Image (tube, rainbow over all chains, first blue to last red; front, side):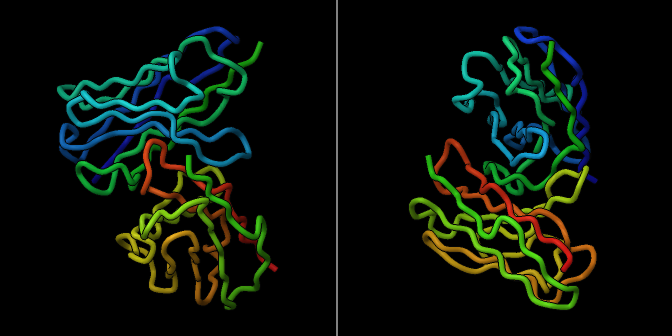
Length: 120
Length: 108
């Protein structure tokens, strides 16, 4: 069955960095676009970034552009999010998500999330 | 960016009754609209896509309708496990695929 397991969250000071990872299993990872979606405490959902199956096409929300970098290693079935210059408003649970269809982006499978807290 | 507006923010309904949740897009998204359910401490769960197609394993009491800018999620007879927060999301214009702010469905 499809499994997505995020890791790498934690407490970091403003201006600091973190690298999130998402380990995927139960499907052919290299066939699917993948996304990071976040949710601030008590708030709604925000699409942060996606990456195409090959890694060529990448999108970032304006709120993280220039600070976050998404990448993937298809040989390791893993998705990553490098987060630099972190701000308090980046505090959120970060979910890794797989779409319903190959070549699409509609998130169907989600990981359990990893909490990132940016605070001094 | 397309803005998705959900109403009401909170809906109080008794078990066994019908719940109707609304979602409005700031411009047409055709039928490219999805609904998610989220329970406390859990990731969102896809319920409906293409405005009216139930995702795998979703009970028939959940139905979606609408197109263009106005959409509705109906839960025909509320079960205890249905009390949660519901989000709509457009996947017509990207980036980004924007979400609504959510409707909390609570027990009356």
